[in-house]
Structure formats: C-alpha cells, structure tokens
Image (tube, rainbow, N blue to C red; front, side):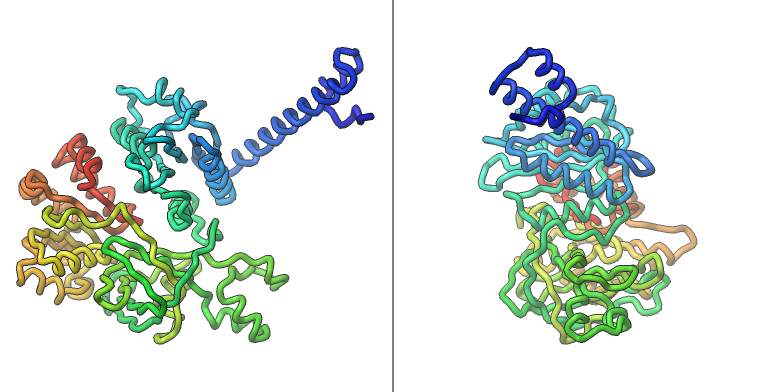
Length: 489
C-alpha cells in the first residue's frame, strides 16, 4: 500500500478516479510527486534569490556536465547572501531583452572548443550582430581544460561578443583550468566587488605554504594618501613563480583582538585564523576560516623572495583591513605567513621580442615591476612605463630602481603622473592621451599593453583612452592576440 496523502492533488485525483491502477499507479505517482517537489523547490529557491535590495543581477549558465550549473548556483547564493537580488537562469532561456543592468555568465567549453548543447539557442537567437548592449555590465567565468587547443573557447567568444556589442566588463574574464580552486577563489573575490562583502568564507581552502616575513618597509612616509608598504616574504618551502603571478595570503586576526577575549591559549591560537563572531564565542567548529587575500607579485624567484606592494586599507570602522592589516601591522617580522602562488596566465609576459607598454598607478606598480625585472634579466629593451600616484616627493615607489632602468636603456620612455603636484589633477590616462601618436606607433610596431592597478577609476579610464586613440575594433584585436592584458582589482 502507499499513502495517497504523500502525492500531489492532481495525482490523488487520477488514482481515485481509476485512471491509473496498481504498480503503474505507484510508479506514475512517485514520478509526479518528485516533479512537483522539484518545481516547488525551484520556485522557493528563485523567490529566496530574488530578495534583497538594489539592482538585480542575472546569473546565466551553460553547462555540459553540470559543473557550470553548480558554480552558477554557488555564485547566485553568494550574491544573494551579500544582499543582491538575483535571477538565476539557464543561458538557453536568456533573451536579448534580459541583457541590461548587471549579468554574470558561467559557461563551459566542451569537445574541441564547442559551446555546451544548452547554449545553442542563445548562440542562434541572441549572439548576433546589431545588438546594442551598452546598458549591460557583465562578468564571465569561463570553464575549460588547458590540455585542449581551444581552451575556454566559448567563454572567450562570449566575452568578445559582449564587449563588441558595447557591454562594459565589471572585471576581466576569469578562466578556470580543470576546476582550478585558485581560479574559483579569484572569481569569488570578484563577486565581492558587486556585493561589497569582502569577508565571505572561501568556497575551497587553499593549500598554503610557509613564508617568512623578512622585511616590511613603508614606501611613502608623509604621503597625503594611505600607507603603502614594501613587503618581502621568503619561502620556507619550495616555491616558484613568474612575472604576472599572484600571491594568495592566509591572513590572521589582530592578536590583540583575539587576546582581549580572555580565552585559553589553545583556543586563542585556533581563533587567530577564524572569523570572530560579534557576540560570545560558542562552538569553535561553527566558525568559518578567514578568506584569503590576493596581491600582485613584484619580484622574480631569482630575487629569493616574493615582494609585494601593499596598501594599508581601512575597514568601515577605521581598523586596518584583513589582509593589509596582517601584513603591514600585526604580523611580526620574522614570523611565518601562510601563502601560495596562484598562476595568472592572463598576465604572463608577451614574447620577449615584442615591445611592452606598462601602465599602472599606486601599488599596481607591483605587477609591472616584475615584468620589468624579467625584461632586464633577458636584456630586452623597448619598454615604456606610464605610472601615476599622488606626489613625486612621497609616492614615487622604487624611484631609484626606475631611474636606473631608464639610465641603462631598459626603459625607453617613462611618463609620470603625480596628481597632487599641480593645481589641475593629472592621471595616467591624461599622460597616455597626450602621447597618442607615440602609442599608435608602438602598437603598429607590435607592442603589447599591460595594465595593473585599480579597476575603478584608473583601469576604466585607461581603457576609454585606448578605445579613443586606437579604436574599439583595434583594441579587440589586441585582446584576441593577447597583446592587451590587465591585472586589475
């Protein structure tokens, strides 16, 4: 026997009317019940995701094996928990009319560069020339396998189509090689730009190595801006990296804040790496680990250490930020720092024979410095640096090194923009526009353009000038050829 009350009303009516009987009735009823529960769960989840305030975010996915769908669900959940209303939808159900406001695309590539089957309708009906997507701001998470020649092909083509149609990228495309957890953590970090929630726990925990905090030096005493520090971390365990790569840091809480809780020493040690609750400490097992922080590496393995340029960032309450506070304030010189190198292929060096234009501001100099060090090691000249900060007297980071590179001929050209050194504010984009003819000449001679620094402001303004000087189609070609790359945050 089976309990009729376990089934939805329409199934109970069919059974009572004799439309289905016996074992077949049980089978049909069970299928109908599961489908009804699924629809109910879907409606309930959609309603929960749609709650929140502000501009909604469309999360669209195209999945072949289910991984992209899984990540899309995690993305939607993270946004919803951050207070953003979310619409979660399979890509096949997305229309051109949906492409306005904010949208995130989580898409996989299958076979030899093919789109998932579920993306066919979108490609056929939506991905056409003539759409004006200038009202759309978007991000793309592209899943792929680097062992295939057409790595992340569909994600890249989707990103290119969106940009060509006038959409504005919220951040650079994130590519995930075979489910790489580090790339997924990077995507999660980009979501914080949308929600403003920077302390959400990592989806997966990094396998940290050990690094000794060997040096910490203030680079800009007396600056009208925030403190910027040169931090040197020497690997205890074997580690390697190349110019363009990132260091993920596992921060710790302010030791004084933990000690103020007055707990036993063994609990204090455990709490140093966990998010502290606002109220009393309950079961430590219920606390989540602190999220990682990422910094562009400013050195090469031949330097014997990872060197970082870290801006001390304040929290809302004025206290030092999680990662920068740990590196610049609370960790003692000589102590062990948890960290791991994240390979950042999208910002690796161009061919050594190619001219290189390096553009950045503030601590964005870090990623550019590593590339200049690599070019110096190779003896490669024809390099152009455009760098900006607040004042030349206080904020010209690594000035002696840059001037030595210029004197030796490693740097063919240096353009500096110190915004506070004159009545009218001058930024790197202004220097770039003033050198428009030189920029066109370098690009015509095969130059690559690398940008490192803040996404808001500097990076977007530089991009606008590049479009103005070179044209949007030319900039798209440079992107396709790997000659226009950005490491922005």
